[in-house]
Amino acid sequence: MTKPWKPTKEQLLAATEKTVEDVIAPDLRVLFCGINPGLYTAAVGHHFARPGNRFWPALYAGGFTDRILSPFDERALLKSGYGITNVVMRTTASADALTKDEIIAGGQQLRAKVLRYRPRLVAVLGVGAYRTAFNQPKATVGPQQETIGDTILWVLPNPSGLNANYQAAELARLFRELKEAADKL
Image (cartoon, rainbow, N blue to C red):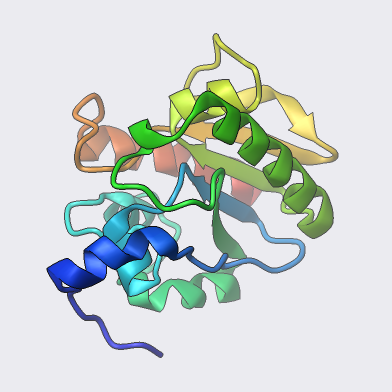
């Protein structure tokens, strides 16, 4: 297992050329889907790695893990039936740098990945990204009407520390709702 480390400024700048490997396996209970890797995440090679990202604390608060995992422990999720991917694989300093066409193409690639790996649930972490990728302009947080094959689609807020619309307690509640739904399947 890789030990946690902090990237240098040079490593962050070079991260735009990198992608982050999916944490995925067939028949997962939940496949979490970020928008795209940020520079920090790509530099260290682990999902949701930027300090201040609330994914790992929300995952714990929602009951998915028995402790707050480090991004460097991400592969431990597979043992519990959880995985991580992204809508768009390209690394950017901010998701705002993605084009609409990239997000739509990423949605198509995600559909293919979901059909291949057959998770029970896919949780897209970003309302705007979901709306664009799946052409659902009125989508809100929570379960969606649309499915991919037998896979249920769910939308959660972007856990970035920059997303001030959702505080930690609200994120925990929303992640718990997803966990309860996953446990019923």
